[in-house]
Image (cartoon, rainbow, N blue to C red; front, side):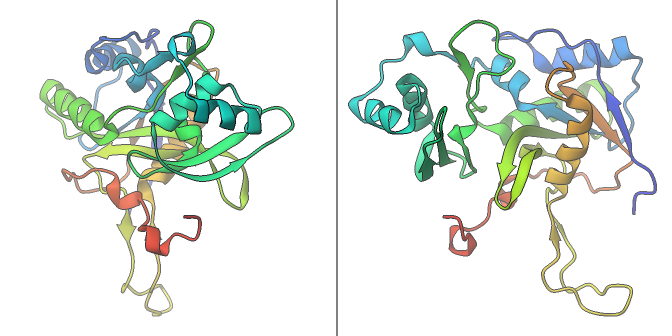
Length: 255
């Protein structure tokens, strides 16, 4: 069990552009922040900088909406160009709702994650009418960054890529892990006994999401801190991604 956790912001990360070597930029951020990596640090990275470096930025002025996107746009009071981009990232529409200002589309994206508007948004993107998509392969991006930083530092460092989402039954947004490498994003306590001797039957903890949310306290939305080190959490370094966090549809009451 971890006795103490530290959250360390990596400052000095510049505005990221397509083609930037994000891993090297992060390493440079360690140096400028005076950070020395330790064995089994966890590097938590906001999705937005991953998407920018991978060129997952779309100019809505380049989008021609289909008749179907226009129809949904009219029904939802939503920019049909945005609807078209959302549909392009969608495996299945789960629910749509029209609001007074603009509607929301809850969809299952290509990775099987259920979230609003396929995770596409315009916040923290320079220029008008530009939006970012989620990374093409968040686990692959996490693996690439983890591998490069391990090679640079000689330390086993897991990577968690986060996005901000809403949740059923709860107000407010929180960070979740949409991509991981080096840490099992689930911790299984089933069949273990609690302090009273009772056997646990359903205790499966989303460690990846909990770590993502903790790092989100430092990231903020206006603080320009897209990278945070979580130090002190005891885990086994494993070559594993985030797919175990996605609930099987047969057990999902919302699909």
